[in-house]
Length: 173
Image (cartoon, rainbow, N blue to C red):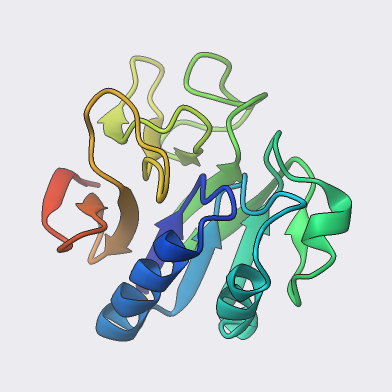
């Protein structure tokens, strides 16, 4: 299975337009949005672009998402977390303002905690046996990282540059 991850769009249309190019290129089976998707002033182009992929979209709500803005989306947005199973891995999907690598959810070792919130890319094994994965931010990166998104394919997690899909970090599972 191929899963494309994005987080912290914050309603920026240029970020979703660039992501659309990678969706076309990678042809993912599933797209996961890890929160902070829209704000109340987001241009209509942002939900329109995201809604193109409603059939393969899984999303969780971020701390900056407002229900009225999210109502423009044509796919469910889970309020705190959800899970996704692929290739024998359990992905715990959350924004990161509650569950995070510093405050992990109560589930088994070997599972993958996918979160955004910090705007900092990450793909690493934790000391408590979990994998922490953060695709960074599509629109507002921090710590001199570029705008980025994530990809799971062939038992490998990667954070890729939004500009050219070059790898920022990669972890084999």
